Amino acid sequence: MSRLAEFRAAEKALQEQLKQLESLKNDAGLKKEIEFEEKLQALMKTYGKTLRDIVAILDPNPKSGLQQATAPKTRRARVVKVYQNPHTGELIETKGGNHRGLKAWKEKYGASTVDSWVR
Image 1 (cartoon, rainbow, N blue to C red):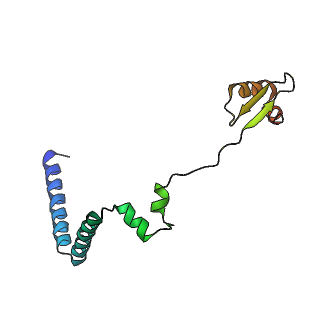
Image 2: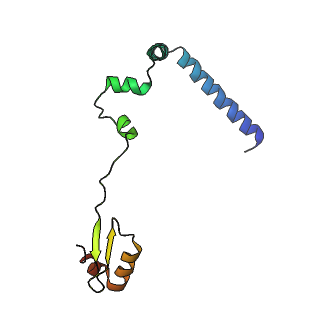
Image 3: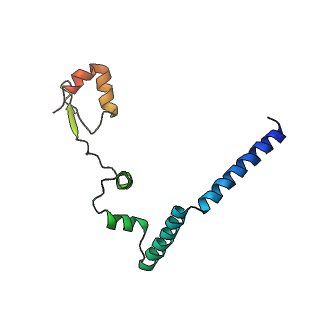
């Protein structure tokens, strides 16, 4: 695309956006929303409250995604598994399968065999 054509396309897009902006400025509903927001901000400032405080007051038991998204997700703690090698009597305590000694046993004896060694 030539620079002139690019300039004219950008200019046309700008004119369309300016028309849209003018129509939004004259919208009564938008004016009411802006007025409400300004009054709410002033009220929050007067009482020293934040938007989160307001949401907590209005919806103390949130079921919406807004509160759930901000709440930290907790998951169940992993259980410690104790493996005992019947050949050597050695014990390995681990919460996951990423233990170096456990991996070595699984490689040597097979995963199903080592899984049967859980106490």
